[in-house]
Amino acid sequence: LGTRILRIFSISEPIYGILIILEGTFNGMGDTKAPFVFSLITMWGIRIFGSMLMINVFSFGLESGLIMMVLDNISRCLRKMEISGLSIGGKKMKYKKFENTIIARIDKGEDIVEQVKNIALKENIKLASIQALGAINDFTVGVFKTKEKKYYANEFKGDYEIVSLTGTINTMNDEYYSHMHLSAGNDQGEVFGGHLNKAIVSATCEMVIQVINGQVDRYFDEEIGLNLLKL
Image 1 (cartoon, helix red, strand yellow):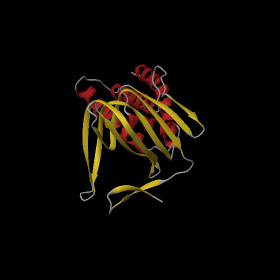
Image 2 (cartoon, helix red, strand yellow):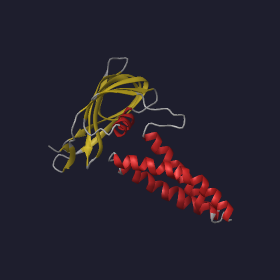
Image 3 (spheres, rainbow, N blue to C red):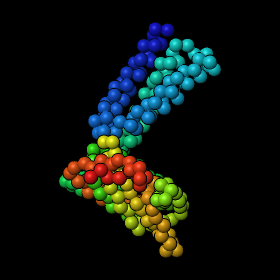
Image 4 (spheres, helix red, strand yellow):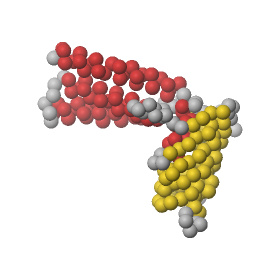
Protein backbone atom coordinates (compact mmCIF):
# COMPACT_ATOMS: atom_id res chain seq x y z
CA LEU A 1 0.00 0.00 0.00
CA GLY A 2 2.78 2.43 0.91
CA THR A 3 4.50 1.85 -2.44
CA ARG A 4 1.28 2.49 -4.38
CA ILE A 5 0.66 5.72 -2.47
CA LEU A 6 4.20 6.96 -3.15
CA ARG A 7 3.76 6.23 -6.86
CA ILE A 8 0.55 8.26 -6.94
CA PHE A 9 2.25 11.13 -5.09
CA SER A 10 5.16 11.03 -7.56
CA ILE A 11 2.68 11.71 -10.37
CA SER A 12 0.78 14.35 -8.43
CA GLU A 13 3.63 16.57 -7.21
CA PRO A 14 4.84 17.96 -10.61
CA ILE A 15 1.23 18.64 -11.62
CA TYR A 16 0.54 20.35 -8.29
CA GLY A 17 3.65 22.51 -8.77
CA ILE A 18 2.39 23.71 -12.15
CA LEU A 19 -1.04 24.37 -10.64
CA ILE A 20 0.42 26.54 -7.87
CA ILE A 21 2.32 28.65 -10.43
CA LEU A 22 -0.76 29.12 -12.62
CA GLU A 23 -2.99 30.01 -9.67
CA GLY A 24 -0.40 32.48 -8.39
CA THR A 25 -0.29 34.08 -11.84
CA PHE A 26 -4.07 34.51 -11.97
CA ASN A 27 -4.19 35.88 -8.42
CA GLY A 28 -1.43 38.34 -9.26
CA MET A 29 -3.43 39.57 -12.25
CA GLY A 30 -6.44 40.17 -10.03
CA ASP A 31 -8.58 37.32 -11.34
CA THR A 32 -9.39 35.46 -8.12
CA LYS A 33 -13.05 34.64 -8.76
CA ALA A 34 -12.59 32.26 -11.72
CA PRO A 35 -9.93 30.07 -10.02
CA PHE A 36 -12.00 29.94 -6.81
CA VAL A 37 -15.22 28.87 -8.55
CA PHE A 38 -13.52 26.25 -10.73
CA SER A 39 -11.56 24.87 -7.76
CA LEU A 40 -14.75 24.64 -5.71
CA ILE A 41 -16.50 22.70 -8.48
CA THR A 42 -13.64 20.25 -9.00
CA MET A 43 -13.06 19.79 -5.27
CA TRP A 44 -16.65 18.60 -4.78
CA GLY A 45 -17.22 17.03 -8.17
CA ILE A 46 -13.95 15.15 -8.61
CA ARG A 47 -12.30 14.69 -5.22
CA ILE A 48 -15.31 14.06 -2.97
CA PHE A 49 -17.93 12.48 -5.24
CA GLY A 50 -15.27 10.78 -7.34
CA SER A 51 -13.74 9.18 -4.27
CA MET A 52 -17.16 8.05 -3.02
CA LEU A 53 -17.89 6.50 -6.40
CA MET A 54 -14.58 4.60 -6.51
CA ILE A 55 -15.01 3.32 -2.94
CA ASN A 56 -18.68 2.35 -3.12
CA VAL A 57 -18.92 1.17 -6.73
CA PHE A 58 -15.44 -0.04 -7.64
CA SER A 59 -14.35 -1.08 -4.12
CA PHE A 60 -11.15 0.97 -4.13
CA GLY A 61 -9.44 1.72 -0.85
CA LEU A 62 -7.34 4.64 0.37
CA GLU A 63 -5.84 5.12 -3.09
CA SER A 64 -9.16 6.40 -4.45
CA GLY A 65 -8.81 9.75 -2.71
CA LEU A 66 -5.26 10.21 -3.98
CA ILE A 67 -6.20 9.23 -7.55
CA MET A 68 -9.06 11.74 -7.52
CA MET A 69 -6.68 14.38 -6.17
CA VAL A 70 -4.38 13.81 -9.16
CA LEU A 71 -7.31 14.01 -11.60
CA ASP A 72 -8.54 17.18 -9.90
CA ASN A 73 -5.12 18.84 -10.22
CA ILE A 74 -4.86 17.80 -13.88
CA SER A 75 -8.30 19.23 -14.72
CA ARG A 76 -7.51 22.52 -12.95
CA CYS A 77 -4.14 22.78 -14.72
CA LEU A 78 -5.69 22.19 -18.14
CA ARG A 79 -8.42 24.74 -17.50
CA LYS A 80 -6.00 27.42 -16.36
CA MET A 81 -3.71 26.71 -19.30
CA GLU A 82 -6.69 27.11 -21.61
CA ILE A 83 -7.68 30.43 -20.04
CA SER A 84 -4.12 31.72 -20.16
CA GLY A 85 -3.87 30.88 -23.87
CA LEU A 86 -1.58 27.86 -23.53
CA SER A 87 -2.10 24.25 -24.59
CA ILE A 88 -0.29 20.94 -24.43
CA GLY A 89 0.93 21.47 -27.98
CA GLY A 90 2.35 24.87 -27.12
CA LYS A 91 -0.28 26.83 -29.06
CA LYS A 92 -0.64 30.43 -27.90
CA MET A 93 -3.08 33.21 -28.57
CA LYS A 94 -2.43 35.07 -31.80
CA TYR A 95 -1.74 38.73 -31.19
CA LYS A 96 1.03 41.31 -31.30
CA LYS A 97 1.56 44.26 -29.01
CA PHE A 98 2.88 47.63 -30.21
CA GLU A 99 3.35 49.89 -27.17
CA ASN A 100 -0.26 50.44 -26.01
CA THR A 101 -1.95 48.84 -29.03
CA ILE A 102 -2.72 45.13 -29.43
CA ILE A 103 -3.57 43.60 -32.82
CA ALA A 104 -5.31 40.25 -32.38
CA ARG A 105 -6.58 37.52 -34.70
CA ILE A 106 -9.38 35.34 -33.40
CA ASP A 107 -9.77 32.12 -35.36
CA LYS A 108 -12.61 29.93 -36.60
CA GLY A 109 -14.56 28.27 -33.80
CA GLU A 110 -13.33 30.62 -31.07
CA ASP A 111 -15.59 32.80 -28.95
CA ILE A 112 -14.73 36.48 -29.28
CA VAL A 113 -15.87 37.30 -25.73
CA GLU A 114 -13.73 34.52 -24.26
CA GLN A 115 -10.65 35.46 -26.28
CA VAL A 116 -10.88 39.12 -25.24
CA LYS A 117 -10.84 37.97 -21.62
CA ASN A 118 -7.86 35.68 -22.30
CA ILE A 119 -5.83 38.53 -23.77
CA ALA A 120 -6.84 40.97 -21.02
CA LEU A 121 -5.81 38.56 -18.26
CA LYS A 122 -2.59 37.57 -19.97
CA GLU A 123 -1.57 41.20 -20.53
CA ASN A 124 -3.00 42.39 -17.19
CA ILE A 125 -5.17 44.99 -18.93
CA LYS A 126 -7.20 47.12 -16.54
CA LEU A 127 -8.57 49.68 -18.99
CA ALA A 128 -8.88 49.58 -22.80
CA SER A 129 -11.13 50.19 -25.79
CA ILE A 130 -11.99 47.49 -28.35
CA GLN A 131 -12.78 47.54 -32.07
CA ALA A 132 -13.20 44.53 -34.36
CA LEU A 133 -14.58 43.18 -37.61
CA GLY A 134 -14.89 39.71 -39.10
CA ALA A 135 -17.31 36.85 -39.78
CA ILE A 136 -19.41 34.89 -37.27
CA ASN A 137 -22.02 32.13 -37.46
CA ASP A 138 -23.40 31.95 -33.93
CA PHE A 139 -23.92 34.97 -31.71
CA THR A 140 -26.05 36.14 -28.82
CA VAL A 141 -26.83 39.79 -28.16
CA GLY A 142 -29.11 41.35 -25.58
CA VAL A 143 -31.26 44.40 -25.07
CA PHE A 144 -31.72 46.01 -21.64
CA LYS A 145 -35.29 47.00 -20.85
CA THR A 146 -34.92 49.96 -18.52
CA LYS A 147 -38.36 49.71 -16.92
CA GLU A 148 -37.84 46.05 -16.03
CA LYS A 149 -34.10 46.45 -15.31
CA LYS A 150 -33.53 43.21 -17.18
CA TYR A 151 -31.63 41.98 -20.25
CA TYR A 152 -33.40 40.01 -22.97
CA ALA A 153 -31.13 37.92 -25.20
CA ASN A 154 -31.55 37.12 -28.90
CA GLU A 155 -29.60 34.28 -30.52
CA PHE A 156 -28.68 34.22 -34.21
CA LYS A 157 -27.14 31.45 -36.32
CA GLY A 158 -26.02 31.45 -39.94
CA ASP A 159 -23.57 33.47 -42.03
CA TYR A 160 -23.07 36.97 -40.64
CA GLU A 161 -20.49 39.71 -41.19
CA ILE A 162 -19.61 41.93 -38.25
CA VAL A 163 -20.69 45.47 -39.13
CA SER A 164 -19.45 46.90 -35.86
CA LEU A 165 -17.94 45.57 -32.64
CA THR A 166 -16.97 48.12 -30.02
CA GLY A 167 -16.46 47.95 -26.31
CA THR A 168 -14.36 48.52 -23.24
CA ILE A 169 -12.23 46.52 -20.86
CA ASN A 170 -12.13 47.67 -17.27
CA THR A 171 -12.66 46.22 -13.78
CA MET A 172 -15.39 45.59 -11.24
CA ASN A 173 -14.37 44.95 -7.64
CA ASP A 174 -10.83 45.10 -9.02
CA GLU A 175 -11.45 42.06 -11.27
CA TYR A 176 -11.71 41.74 -15.06
CA TYR A 177 -14.85 43.18 -16.64
CA SER A 178 -15.77 43.83 -20.27
CA HIS A 179 -18.65 45.61 -21.96
CA MET A 180 -19.08 45.03 -25.70
CA HIS A 181 -21.74 45.74 -28.31
CA LEU A 182 -22.00 44.02 -31.68
CA SER A 183 -24.02 44.42 -34.85
CA ALA A 184 -23.86 41.89 -37.69
CA GLY A 185 -25.47 41.61 -41.12
CA ASN A 186 -26.72 38.62 -43.11
CA ASP A 187 -26.89 37.96 -46.85
CA GLN A 188 -30.22 39.82 -47.07
CA GLY A 189 -28.69 43.02 -45.75
CA GLU A 190 -30.49 42.69 -42.41
CA VAL A 191 -28.51 43.84 -39.40
CA PHE A 192 -29.04 42.71 -35.82
CA GLY A 193 -27.20 43.85 -32.74
CA GLY A 194 -27.08 44.61 -29.05
CA HIS A 195 -25.08 43.88 -25.93
CA LEU A 196 -22.64 41.10 -26.80
CA ASN A 197 -22.85 37.86 -24.82
CA LYS A 198 -21.30 35.39 -27.27
CA ALA A 199 -19.94 35.39 -30.83
CA ILE A 200 -18.39 32.33 -32.48
CA VAL A 201 -16.03 33.10 -35.37
CA SER A 202 -16.85 31.38 -38.68
CA ALA A 203 -13.79 32.54 -40.66
CA THR A 204 -11.69 35.13 -38.84
CA CYS A 205 -11.97 38.16 -36.58
CA GLU A 206 -9.51 41.05 -36.63
CA MET A 207 -9.38 43.07 -33.43
CA VAL A 208 -7.63 46.20 -32.18
CA ILE A 209 -7.34 46.72 -28.43
CA GLN A 210 -6.17 50.17 -27.37
CA VAL A 211 -4.77 49.92 -23.84
CA ILE A 212 -5.24 52.99 -21.63
CA ASN A 213 -2.85 53.73 -18.78
CA GLY A 214 -5.06 53.71 -15.71
CA GLN A 215 -7.95 51.85 -14.10
CA VAL A 216 -11.67 52.57 -13.87
CA ASP A 217 -13.78 50.29 -11.69
CA ARG A 218 -17.52 49.64 -11.88
CA TYR A 219 -20.30 49.48 -9.31
CA PHE A 220 -23.88 48.23 -9.42
CA ASP A 221 -26.39 51.07 -9.52
CA GLU A 222 -29.66 50.07 -7.84
CA GLU A 223 -31.68 52.80 -9.56
CA ILE A 224 -30.50 52.01 -13.10
CA GLY A 225 -29.99 48.28 -12.62
CA LEU A 226 -26.64 48.22 -14.40
CA ASN A 227 -22.93 48.09 -13.57
CA LEU A 228 -21.87 51.70 -14.13
CA LEU A 229 -18.45 53.30 -14.38
CA LYS A 230 -17.18 54.57 -11.03
CA LEU A 231 -15.94 58.07 -11.93
